[in-house]
Image (tube, rainbow, N blue to C red; front, side, top):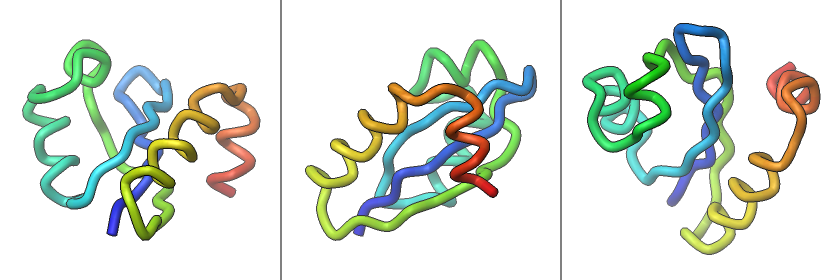
Length: 78
């Protein structure tokens, strides 16, 4: 199973990504490994997750969410 996740950064911005291991991915973000954006902004916590059966569908959903405005992402989280 793959997950699309929205992560709050220390500057308040929202990062969107995919993973098949949420715990490990958050730890890597916090350690500054594997993502330029979160390395620069600092990872804080996962705000939202969504499960997908395969990587392809998770990638499509990630791309869709990345095109959204901040407000639309906040509405999804709520």
